[in-house]
Length: 239
Image (cartoon, rainbow, N blue to C red; front, top):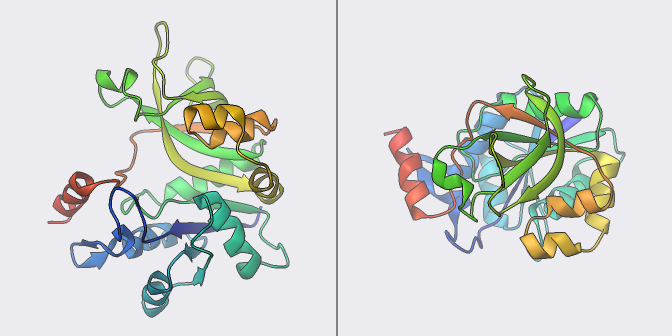
């Protein structure tokens, strides 16, 4: 496969406006996310909904393109960026790596590519629950996997915010995706699906379209900066 990593970013985040430029130990969050992605050895670009993000990344020596700020999701932003970055479709796989994960393991991207190479249309990651309260917390997205005993990767059957019934591990979904290029096109061309609207989880649109999602278990979920408390935690990591 010939993959590319694209990091979507925009200034108008609801809970933490301007977070791509938030300072973490003297470096903007989007640049820290870009640094980690580049360590994977893959081609990396930022898909920005704001020119100031584009200018910052380019000034740091990175590749960035402007995308329409009205695009409804990060996946749509990634697809729009690819039309500029790779109009000849030389890249047959893309990793959508979140710009609010400033400390993501570089192996995150390569693992998604491995999953795509094994088969399936979309790849993603999960980690074990961090706390018993995760099971009932609607803000924690749970992945339901077809995972044989002892295996660390398998097919995703469903994603939910609800409490799961019965014994067994609860897998927290990590919002990183790898797409085959044609699967991303198909996903973005489809309207939001009934289950997607009900759970407010866009990956359910892919499942309703019949796309196959493969997931791998990783040791822990990377810190995702969604609010001021998360930003404080990120700053403590580099203090």
